[in-house]
Image (cartoon, rainbow, N blue to C red):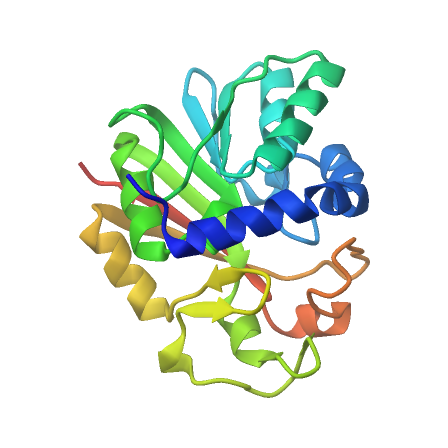
Length: 251
């Protein structure tokens, strides 16, 4: 199948920026690997994924492989997929340095290179579910999951995206765009995606996914981040800049 225009544009951007991205963020993500979002809130506190013992786990948009290698080091069966060859190069180098396996595949979240019902858990932390078209990525995630499986993904919240001020590249304390027009947020470099809350829920139901939770992340009082342009701490203490959808495949 032919990659979509969105995939081609985003892959080119990630291939060109991967080195700079890993230089800016890679070490911190590795140190705080089993954690969510730009504020690195630990999975041990949020308990989104639960007990992964004996399960087949796929990280969508694994980037530099920090989550996947951390899970491997803890003895879990984890796999990573990303569409960027440059990002996967970082992931494989990190895995070799840390002495883990290198179960990384190049693939597009809109047409995953895995058989139906291959995984018990599929998760994403600001990766493929932001950069792929939602209707394609969610359908593919559901396809590769087994019945009763878990899908969890963290991304920018609709609230943050509604408050993003394009002219200044900052998040505002005022609404900046029409809620009902949320879909593709595109600039010269990349295309990110967002849906209204109801649209997300309808998309999940169309793909045999039921909502178990919507975890709206609040930055801790003493939080720091390497993503200085995402949102000021004071803003992220008042409004959720990120959320994690937690979904269960019903059949």
